[in-house]
Length: 141
Image (cartoon, helix red, strand yellow):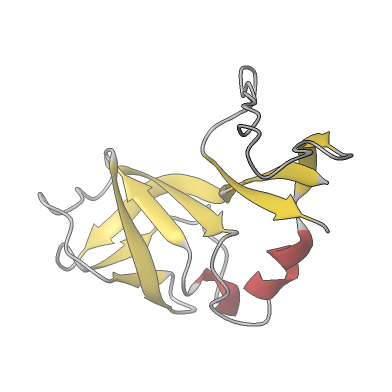
């Protein structure tokens, strides 16, 4: 049998405005952001359409990202969104998503009866599926 499985790539965690800017790499988030949460390290932060990976997050809501935002976020006006990356296992908290796959399509039974018979072609429509997603093929013999 052959199955196509899908899952969401990210899940929203928090959103708000940048409270203070030290640089394009280090800045402080507003009170909407929770106090120190270890699993935010490795999460994705999006500001003004650009996304970066959070490499450090402190109890003072100070974020350090892997690459500078350009231009640097503006205190009081730049809006942020933090997303959890389901596809990456940064620490034990993130690894809980390893099994979050949903079977979207499958086929079973013998599909090719001889070595010379051409491959069967199939199309899986993803219309109506919220993006971004990732997919995988799972085959069983």
